[in-house]
Length: 219
Image 1 (spheres, rainbow, N blue to C red):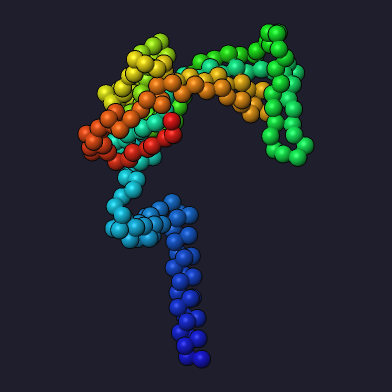
Image 2: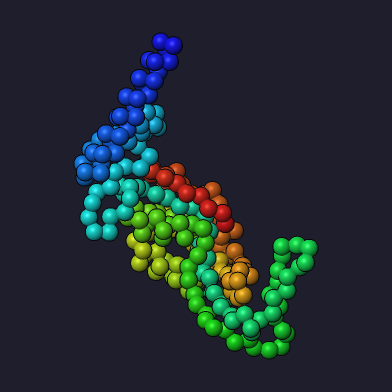
C-alpha cells in the first residue's frame, strides 16, 4: 500500500507539471515547452549529430540550414501531351488493375496542351533541393545536342552547379513523351539515350568531398 501511495503521489506531481507547461504556453511564454523538446532530442543529437540544423531567418529561408548536396542519376527532356478524355478511349481490364489508352491509327488527335520540361531523377531532385536554399551539384550524362542545352539552361536558372556534368558524343540526351488523359495516369514513351552511358569514370571521388548528402536516383 505504501508503494501505491508513493506511485500515486509521483503521478500526481507529473500531472501538475504537465498542467503547468500547458498553462505557461497558453499565456504566451513558450520557453518551458521549448526546453522540454530540447531535452528529449538531446540524446539523438549526441548519438548521430545534428541531422537538420536550425535555420537562419530571413526572406525565403526554408527549414534547415544550407546543406551541400550531390545528386546522381538520370537526366531527361519530357514532352507532355495532355488530351481530353472524350478524345481518346480508355480500356480497363476486368480482372486486373491495368488500363490502356487507345489511339486510332491514321488520324490526328487534338491535344489540349503540349509542353516541354526537364526531368529525370537526378535533375528533379537537384532542382527541388536547390529551391530549398541548398548548395546543389549533379552528376548526369547528356548528349551533345539541343536537349542538353535545355537541361543546362534549366539547371543554371535554378542555381545548380554544373561542373560535374559530362557529355557523350555517341548518344543523344535522354527524352520521353508522356501522354496524359482520363484520370491523368500517364502513358510514357521513354528513350534513355546518354543516361545508359554513365559509368564509374564519370563519378570522381572529388565530387563527394564536403557533401552533407548524396542522393542517387535511377537512370
